[in-house]
View 1: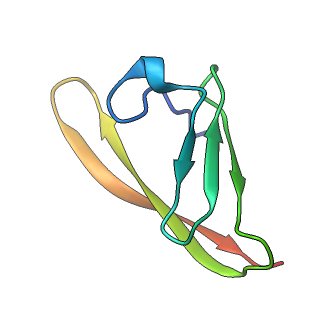
View 2: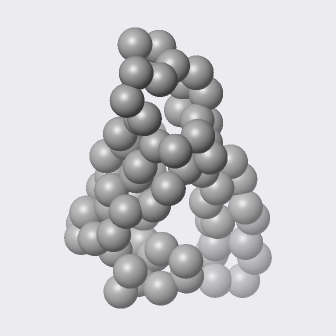
Length: 70
């Protein structure tokens, strides 16, 4: 499955900006909603960031965990 980001902090105009993660990694969001993850230099372990999924009526916030192994 594909994860596409449609808004950052609830605002679709905030795409094309970087998001920090719990361990200092960076999520860079492109205008098309795709994203790239960059871990901190020389770091391994689990990193995470929260996303909110909404259908316009109900929403839920979940943590996305990325495991960096090398």
